[in-house]
Image 1 (cartoon, one colour):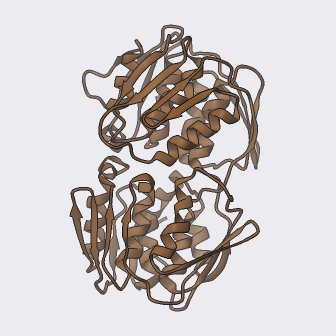
Image 2 (image 1 turned 45 degrees about the vertical axis):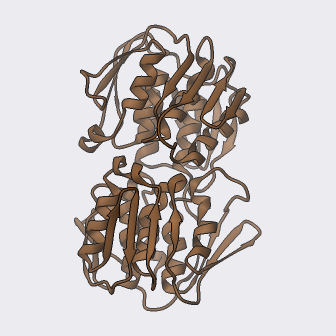
Length: 422
């Protein structure tokens, strides 16, 4: 595939029905919990198969799990804690670099973690500080980032620990996922600024409880009793964050898009599209297992706090850049530490096409401006690519850099998007 991909342009309203692949967040949590199950295999139906989930599967296999892959299901056999040194490739997957180190601490061998060059810039201090507070030996030469080595000593006592997770809720989920395997369980407190992405923590707690783990949760504090993690036969929900581009297409073309198998209740951050679409002047309607998004009037601006659903920001910003009124996006300072500095990247790329985006202390302010053809850089960030293709629907002549970066969470995205926009 060439480095620059011509984004499909659409002169008429979209009218389509789509099915999106499984949720990355749910797939990777299910993989970790299946690997930690006390006895018996777990079955994951309709898992996401992508770079991030393959990296997670590979990491757990290197620690002693066995995963049998079929076309539409994975069977996971619990791991035997590592007893020989291994190296884990995290790629650019935040879930791997944060969820797997506590698992590695259960073994009795050093496990080294490294990843893509950009991964070495992502904040890890919360995870590493939490591990050290639990008495786990971590060698990182003072960097607080990849690469680092977790030196397992045959188990973890657990107990009380405080973590500053203000830069990523994954620091909390990482310890919650393994807390039941600590000898004394876990009493975890968040200290610091406001905790971002609360739905992801809620998802972790829900998945633990589905497997019989006793979790008590109050704002900023979670306690887990030591005990078994039950194996589970589960079907992975579709990834509602990855549905965002399709949802946006209905808004920016004044069309209609139906997303199949949208769950009635879910902890996924992407479920917020049900509130975001009306904020821009669109409509949402459920018909059985289909959620229909439509728009026929003015694409209006909005004032939105995206603190809990920051991963949706790139596509939301693309919608806002095409709206007829100003938009303010707030509560997302933590996006500066994602795959790229998403706030700076969005401002640079939309402004490069003639937009008027201003970075604020905790977000973006976007004024309506006519956009022009040009190149849209993705910074090896899958969600930046999704933003670019949404702009391309309304603006002819936009080229997306490295559309293949979408393979991180959606390997068939370029093909599916091309078919969707025909």
